[in-house]
Length: 98
Image (cartoon, rainbow, N blue to C red):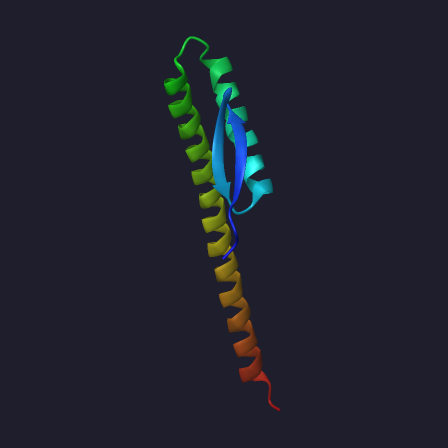
């Protein structure tokens, strides 16, 4: 198991201390979350921080669901292609007189 490291990140003008296994990924995530929070604040400037956080979380969850669906669709298509290839190989083996 990887050793966890303490990392300080800043999101929406507030600093957080985290225990992370991969500092680079944690930093990228913090940058991404902060970006979504700032974009949400620009779109809804009169809303309190909690509302901005919830809307930003929903936007991030939406992006995640889109990516999961793309991945699921890709896996289905790949599985179908593998089945067709196996069928073709089997048919070729059956028709090969040697």
